[in-house]
Length: 364
Ligand code: SF4
Image (cartoon, rainbow, N blue to C red; front, side):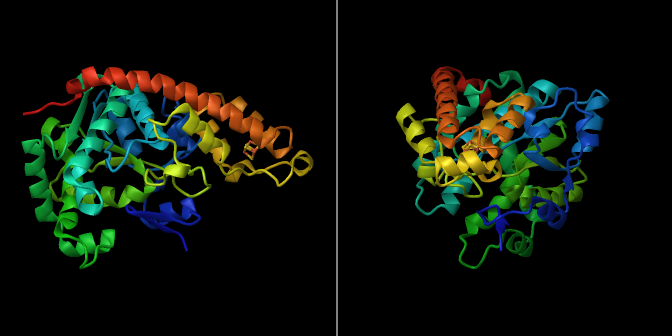
């Protein structure tokens, strides 16, 4: 039985079934046709479901602006799946002129993770912010919000108003909290709602949230709060998960062996990719004869989500894999080269971001 909630993802996920259970809507070709330059992550259905994204597109087509909210819980260094999401956010900024808000919920990580102390979560928030700044968001249209270091008074006031609208029983049933949870964790959904509604309340911009499907419950709770405040309900683009290198359902920053961090060295990248789970056969002879299975392969997932922009290349790799024309070792070498090159470049930008980070932080 798969488990899927903001704090736990396990098992084989049937995404169509989940969308139905959660009450979201699958992204179809009609919706995609309304976008001028289609990002590969939309074309390849990494973002596969939405809430009111059609309304956002219509609103934008009338010449209106909207905000993109995409938060980060800084409990560790950023990994490649995080970068994938924020690169996509940059595309939304470029394609639609969206204002981007990135809340760093270091307070949440402090309250939920017993092993993390106050200083460590703030250190990770800073390190993660460097990765975001390295992506090159337009500083005039981007705001980073740090809950612990520079709590924004408007944001805190909004979280208090949201807290008054969310009952303990809603929080318990929506997030599965029990008597053992500390009281800080039961307040956190109010802060999350405030993060999402902040651009609407402060700047009059309706919010679009890009987030993994496991976080959808936060969107639902916030939409209820928005309704009570008579504000536009936040829209969402919901993504599936990126496999970890061990073949697990979701890449997790806490599983170092099967995750590529933005700070990994070339040697670490190579060692992790060479151990990665693939859809290959036991022997070369068998693979040449029977072909392999790209659908379960973590290497295929990395190559197609990150590095192959051309759909023809993706189809070519798929066919070569299925017919045994290519072997796993060749794919792994190819992926190692791509990741090392990509992260070498990213690390340089990250270093420069130390000088520009302040441009994204508007303190009162
Ligand atoms: Fe994955 Fe490549 Fe092996 Fe196919 S041949 S299973 S794509 S590593």
